[in-house]
Length: 329
Image 1 (tube, rainbow, N blue to C red):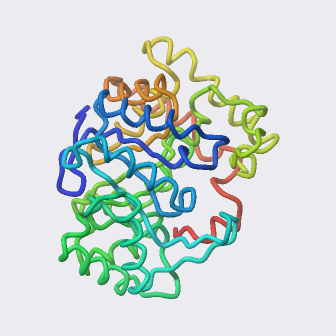
Image 2 (image 1 turned 120 degrees about the horizontal axis):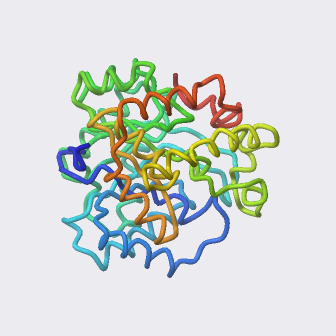
């Protein structure tokens, strides 16, 4: 398995760090501890850090900005996203905005929070159905010409939207959920990325911790943990999915690796242009996730894992119905 691959014009380790959980969605956070984890990640070899303006209503970008102030900016690759405007106080209400005016407004605010003069990879977080994607990408191209952003990316879009955008300007990366439990990118997107030379960034490659074997109903039900509202983590669905995960124990033992590393290695093995951005707030898992680059799975093991997590065996969808409405298929 190749351990590095191109992303936004840079050669990077194929395991990056998803930073969303350091600001919300997974319970309480410790700011100083999160900074320590971010700094430690660089020592371990991480270079790719993924954030978004909506995470913590800007708090996540400010955290990354503070982290960057103590690092060599040129050595790190920062990806952020725009387009989801949340309601006051971080509520669930949101508006998707991909208008040219908002693209620029959002970027300037992100740059200020990050304390940097440029963002290496800037994603459309969700496509605005009321704005032609050509308009959104056109505005991003102007920002790229100004040197404010590097690569242009898209998140959770259809193949048609991706191809239309790519015709306006080459798309550097597509970001979509991809794991043993969520194989939707295989329905055309991975093939299109391969044909066009676009990197693919898989988020939630451990299905929000479900594939680690460390979760249970009590963990998910804690205050501030958004997973309790996701169908895949609810009641009988959670029980069924945990049973699927438990069956990985023997294989992990044979491979002398963790369940999480099995899950991550499976995603990485699908295509050499795939990057993953598992998130964590604990140094133990930071190292564990990065070392998934060293786990080699045989062809037979890869096939067994695919069959074991056949789509028909996975209980519950990724998001509630209302949230799925914003995701293109």
